[in-house]
Image (cartoon, rainbow, N blue to C red; front, side, top):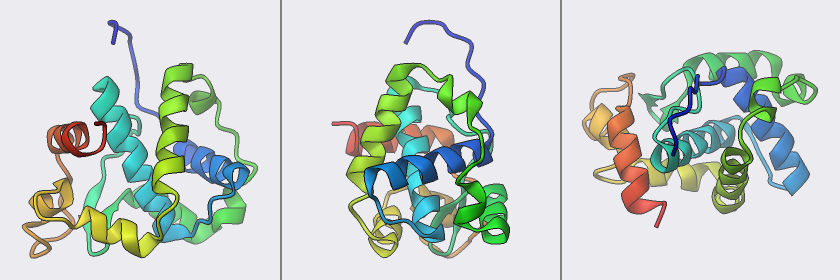
Length: 156
């Protein structure tokens, strides 16, 4: 990637964008699956471009990586509350970023929330490392671990 200034985008904009794109692509979503799809987009962008997509890092919760601010908001406003939310910062991303996000949603959107949660728990995953295999929750996942994991296991 060329030397470009990039500021991570507000998690609520990314959440709204993912909801919109999933609905346009016919991908079933619920709150848990949205969190996992956000994590997958975060990881693929970090792995491919070396930058954080979202301004809040994921934390290791019981069912996998969670973006706490985004989770609290989606629990309060529900999916319907994000359908019409503007996403100017996401819309202004380079086409290559939006294409990777769409490819990520198409690839991971085929799986259920449970399957995605189980995938994030695989031994050696960033969630597994941050939580000591689930023994110690609510720690922030390392961007370096996420980047390396997605480069080695997802962006083949």
